[in-house]
Length: 298
Image 1: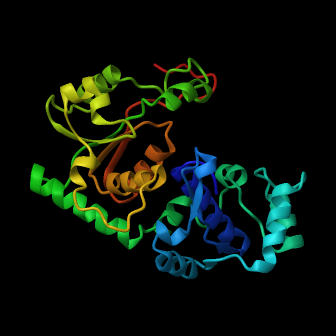
Image 2: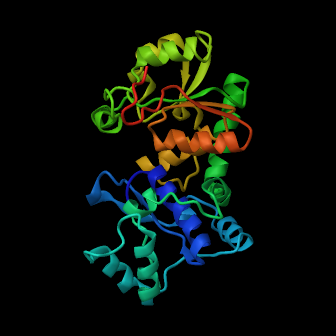
Image 3: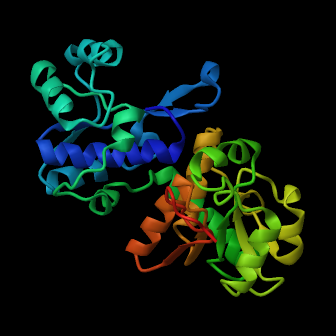
């Protein structure tokens, strides 16, 4: 699977829901890391991120089968699907079913798996229960939270997902159909929203979830006491392989441990964290509106 970590996660969730619907065997996929630098992109197995035994047991309990590897005999059909001009690389269930009947395998690509949102017996909310972080990540998050307790006398902080990177700024006009600004929330606007809408008092500590460093957020961190995972993550697993994808997964698991998360509704990262938190009785909310086509957002 290509694309970012949480787009890959959504593909995974849709794939398991389809496996349940069609009685397919679901092959747990590899994840692509450093996907923006294709020459450096490498694959990491499913078990590097998630507890594979838990996922396989979840599938069995819910009436479908999940396995770790695709049989060698099916590799050619998978490659053929990707190359074939009539291959089901679009969200068309009839094409997927036909391909499965003819070849015994369907390769869910970033195109079809991400966009296949069907009413299936196993909903995405159900499928999220199949994904439990691998032990290494659980240990690292436990160490981060322990350091939070030691240095800030709390095991939870309001977590704020900040997106102000150049690639985000460049992409926003394509996502917001009205004025091209709603997915972009600059620092000053974010500060006002946190104070006036969510009533976070000036000077309170917040956990900043971002690819941007705290030093690059002067306005936000002037009004609030910004804390990053970097300063809390003093006891890192020696086997941790650092990449943009693995660091994003640490952010994801850490955000899901907080009692309050404030995210950008245009971000798949934020939307997945909100879904996870709200399903467990914690609070995940968005600090900006989602503009629909033809709708004026204020």
